[in-house]
Length: 434
Ligand code: GLV
Ligand code: MN
Ligand code: MN
Image (cartoon, rainbow, N blue to C red):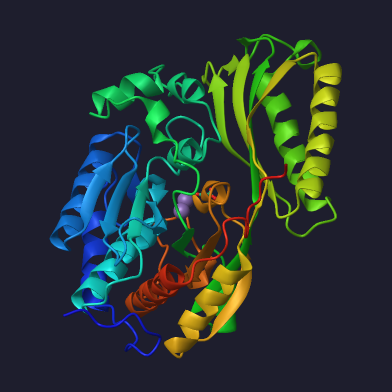
């Protein structure tokens, strides 16, 4: 017997210990020993992690579909299966030396949310679907959110096929080798596929913990951009070539990295952040002047205009390095994405779901990017954050307590239930700018 779809149903209960054990089990599937987690796209660990999540979803009685890039969909049927579903989900790939909760909380928390509804005998008005997105992290091919970009039509399949990893293998080659063989063209969602999409994620920042608030209702996602630079100077003997004659590509890269830091600090916006997290030096010998450097810049802001101002500063610094050091610098934009604004109705639904569980909530902006940044192009979206201890993320000591994760999953279940009953209008929260 199904419970009625009414607001008076008992608040949904999540088994916190079970969800915690499932997260621990997934964390053990890692290329680096605990406490670090590393699961890079289409590696043995990524494939084992996918199989692990699939087994849990199947055990929960969810229907499984996998698309040609490997995005996995776990579906709980609704009273009217013909209606567009309410989506949720996140990612299970993990950057080198990551923690256990980035992305995984949204995938396993999503499965736990649907399982709890099913076990409570509650049939949603329309289907609910958890997505485990392929390659939210840019680790292997330098580009993040590959699965959701393809779903939203934000990148051409040809551009994805042509991506290369550091070993020179194409995306297409490693995708096929991992067993995903359909046409990438089929990944794009039909218009109106999701009635709404709401992602559960750890905050990865300190605000909820500092405020003592267990639930964050995300109002917007900051706009990320990234750039790949190739610097070419002149190599030579570290002892024999005197300083006036040098065209050291690494010294030039250092000047650019400092310019990135300066531009972000002086942008006039406290939300501008700039990072150079990848720097490869050739030939990489202590007694050889660096002739070539590959440098990557990650630049973000909640406002597009201040991010662009900061990048203009960086470009001016690059020009000065070219001129003054005689080093060639080629700049390629990897991605420069606009921010996403949550649908007000979804923000309100998250707040109402938190209140139904007697949990305080707070509105906040996501400074990290998420697959929801791209789902926002094709559906009204929102996000639910749970606290991160000391605001730490992308590190092995990332931590969110079991009860905080369970609270997030319960709020997710309640939010999806309410949105299934009463979805936002299709244009709400749509960030396409014309
Ligand atoms: C996601 O991992 C990000 O870098 O924001
Ligand atoms: Mn991440
Ligand atoms: Mn993430």
